[in-house]
Picture 1 (tube, rainbow over the protein chains, first blue to last red):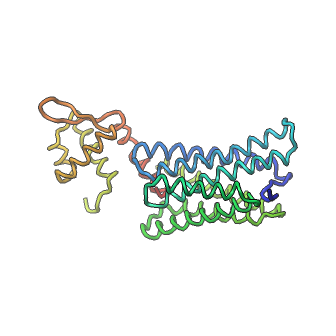
Picture 2: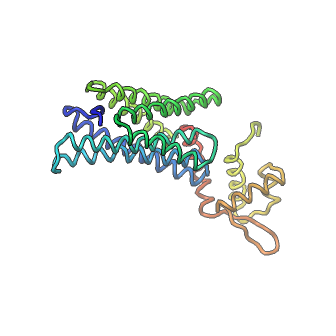
Picture 3: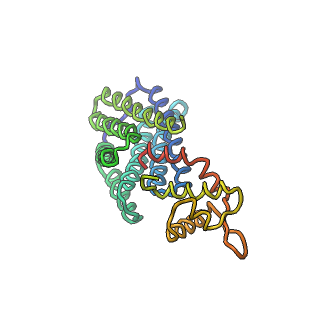
Length: 210
Length: 89
C-alpha cells in the first residue's frame, strides 16, 4: 500500500475540522436533493443526492477515525491510513454515481459495472491510493466537462457556481495525486477542497435566499 | 405564455389551477385554465395521480383536488426549481 495521501501530523486537528464541516455541507446538499427528487421526480436529483450522501460518509469516516486516535489502541498513522482508505472507497462510490448521472440513460447494469470496475481497481491495485485518486480525478474531470457543456449549451448562469465548485474539487484531487511525499501539496489539496465545498454551501444558501 | 413550458411548470400550472378553484376542479376547468391540449392534460392528470399530487373525487363526474403532497409541491415549487437550476439537475 502506497504512503501517499496521509495527512501530515501538523495538519491534524484542522484536517478533522475541515472534514466534519465538509461532511455536514454534503449531507445538507444530499438531503435537499432527495427532497427535490421526491417533488420533481428528476433522475439527476436522485443520483446527485446519492452521490453527495457517499461524499458525506467519505468525510465523516476519516474524521471519526482521526478522533479515535486520541483514545484508541493504535497510533496516529494507522488511524490515518484506515480513514484515508474508507474516504477513497466512499469517494469513488460518490464520483461513480455522479458520472453515471451525466449519462442520459437509465441502466442499473451500467451503474453496477461502473462501480465494480472503479472499486475493484482501487482495492486490488498495489498502489491503492494513487490509482484511487487517479480514477476519482478522471471521473471528476468528466463531470466537470458535462457541467461546463450544459452551462454553455443552456446558457444557464445559475449553474456556474456548481461548475466552478467541481473545478476546484478536480484541481484539489490533482494535488492529492501529486502529494507523494509532499505534505504541502496535501495541505493545498485540502484547502482547495474546502473552497469547493464552501462554494457548494454558498450555492445552497442562495437557493433559499430571495 | 411565450416560451415553451417544461413538465415541472405544466404540473405547477395544473396544481395551481386546482388550488385556486378552492374546491374540487373538473377537467374542463383545468383544461381551460392551464392552456393544454386534451391529450396532454390526460397524460399529466395520470402522472399527477400516480405521484399522489392530486386525488380523484366524485361519483358521476370526475373532479380533482389536491393532496398534501400536491400542496407541498406548490409551496416548494420556487425553491425546487431554484435548487435544480443552481445544481444543474
